[in-house]
Image (cartoon, rainbow, N blue to C red):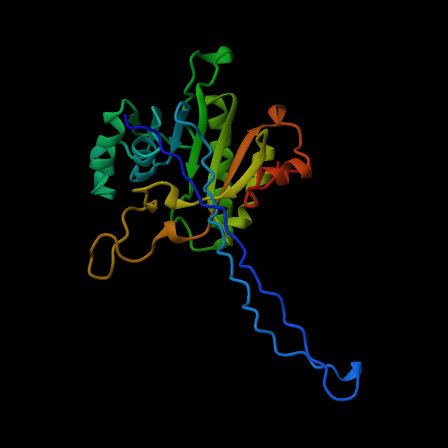
Length: 290
């Protein structure tokens, strides 16, 4: 396995020095008539905006459960580029053949995942999935440090916005309940949604609260942090008017946000404003309040 790479950004930018403004000369009738010469100083150079470093909400050593993985490109990126060693990638499709029918290119991603000892599990419904735990019954203890569900959506069940909102809220509530059975102590559940309506109408923070969870923080999801990742639609690959794969809509280009949930009884103490500023990530929210 290759050496782990870290993202690094240049942050030092020196402001341009400005020469002193020359003194004006007095002319004619006294001090009140003094007229300065036009300034010959050069305007300050514009300092480039520092790129926002992506937030990566997991470590390579974490046991990670990925739900509703579509074409498995996100899972493959975690294995290949983030060196994750314990991935369980789940899909709704009943078999590899069914998955290839929707995403013809998926075989390459499956190979990358399984080559490093991680696995792909088929026929896993986010609303009904069994626990990934080391015991059974009341003594069961979840084994997953991170449970990630990127862009959950029920698909095109209805064109009515209100119905779509309700269907997706029901999906998330059921997912939260099932995910808790697999979540290890002090683990996190991470859900990523597109920004704006209708996704803001889902009220994901409230859905989590009703399920015994609370948002610890949220951050801007940056698809570029996951080389090889492409957003896969629920119904299959996107095709252009000529029927070619890859045309049209690209979800990875849309603004999106990830929400990190923890159990309510494991909510960390609030971070002071002074400490929060010292963390230096203006994109991240503090813990959920209210």
